[in-house]
Image 1 (spheres, helix red, strand yellow):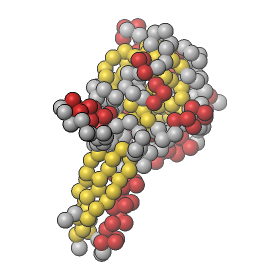
Image 2 (cartoon, one colour; image 1 turned 90 degrees about the horizontal axis):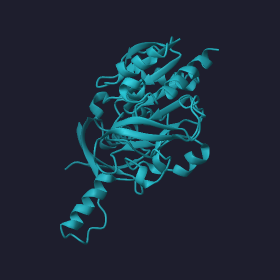
Image 3 (cartoon, one colour; image 1 turned 30 degrees about the vertical axis):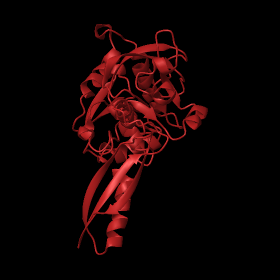
Image 4 (tube, rainbow over the protein chains, first blue to last red; image 1 turned 45 degrees about the vertical axis):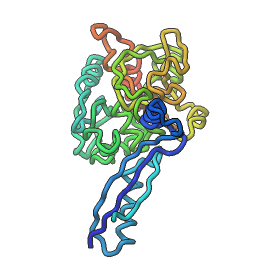
Length: 82
Length: 230
């Protein structure tokens, strides 16, 4: 069976995120004064053939730690795609 | 004495560094990233460029190129390894150097001469330089902004070898071109045989290029490979 997941990757909190900081400033300049934090990340859709959703998810988990995210500076979440 | 220069799809500084090494009297050999043998190498350079198009993250795909098992083996054996710019990014992704490199603070690609101050000579790259020496080397990167989880620990360990500065040696935010933590431009590993830096010593390796300041680093690296031989 094919399982679809969406991996969301973002910079670890506290580490510099120049895109997020610049976008926050731009939003503030546009009058969105309530914006206190913007962070950038990316999403990666992965479809995987596996025997069960648990097996698929554990494969995705391994993909994240090995390649998709850099644990030195990024964190990630895995969600089943609707 | 041969220094291997690793070539990935997208690498574009391999001839520059080979030229500088050859001019200094050292043989070089280009090694394709899909090769799996570095047994004849006394040193390894990962040059600048955009390996695998910098897809996903800079260096993220390159670190899984077949040659990397050999690079890691040589690093563990104490062979001098140098990563320049994209090569530095690959070494951090491979876990051979601490930290990582992200987009520049001002979101601009920086292509400009930059002053550096030597912070430590305890590395295969800076051994021929002097602490406090100021070098002018070109920076040529978008993801040159160095960060690390625990910057205090790499400072305590003395892993920082080069910092961004100005002609007077001032080190603060005004002399930090890209937002790197503590103005870090180059670092080494705890065994001191792996080094990486964002600026390009090979582009400042003879007077006709405007500066020969990079030669003290290139000659130091060559000397390091000779010491391994002995």
